Amino acid sequence: MRLTTALSLLAFAASTVSAIPEGLQIEVISKRDTCNHKTVKGDKISVHYRGTLQKDGTQFDASYDRGTPLSFEVGSGRVIKGWDEGLLDMCIGEKRKLTIPPELGYGSRAMGPIPADSTLVFETELVGVQGHDEL
Image 1 (cartoon, one colour):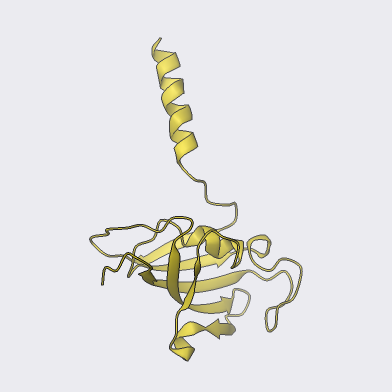
Image 2 (cartoon, rainbow, N blue to C red):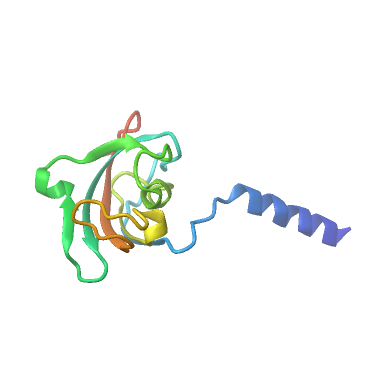
């Protein structure tokens, strides 16, 4: 009886936790002490970022340089998969470093200054979630 209950609890826990895709590395740089809302799929978020190539650190894009964060619906496929997954469960004001392998980025195709099969590194900062102002 106890084994059945334990296995049922483990199965339930596994079904409620979303897995981070293989190869995606998420490092929390800073976070707030309090958080009223963590990002979920479907949230319209605003993110400041700086993107570099892992191989040599070359910067290929940065919203900070433009002074305007990128806004999009997270989890909707409008950005690379590494962002759609790496920016979930995040609070406004939190900063993360995402290391994204090619299969969760642009894959085997070149994209502007980004060579094919590149591992990408993004410094990200969640600055807003539509309908959930905290700062």
